[in-house]
Image 1 (tube, rainbow, N blue to C red):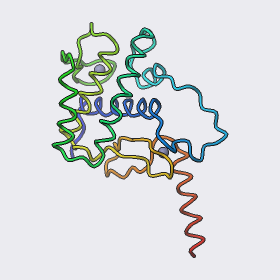
Image 2: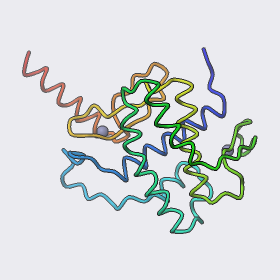
Image 3: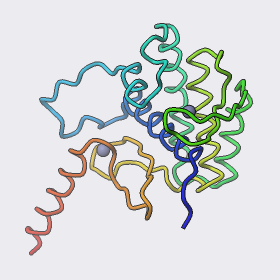
Length: 195
Ligand SMILES: [Zn+2]
Ligand SMILES: [Zn+2]
């Protein structure tokens, strides 16, 4: 069994944050199905980055956070296109984005995480750091497992994306627990009706 290296684990955490941002920034049709009465707070890019351990998020400028939001939202078609894409199509799309990056890798070990790569120099702006991390993580994942761990929530009316980090690739739902529970309830009712 292959054990993920710190670089690979790091890449997967970054893909999780990228997808959390994409889902929050780019609501798709029917996204709010079954969620009436739920007053959602405005989506906060800084808070999400902070929660996922981007230590510079708290002090980043508003302009830097805005640029991250805009650029990540622009990546939505790329991420949507990964679902079911061939390796050639996916790598072409990702390679096109990689040409835009100022990649300056360094080898580091910090905060209890073993040796891994950082993709931008310590002097890079925070927005460049985050965008470079996201695209390099996507590139690493394409090399590891291709596109098969990228998925869309199976709940009716939910178009949110997820990254499936499970060992046996069994994930079906997005991070919103209500999606899994309302689908299970609906399945259960359907089974009882047909019984
Ligand atoms: Zn690190
Ligand atoms: Zn969902």
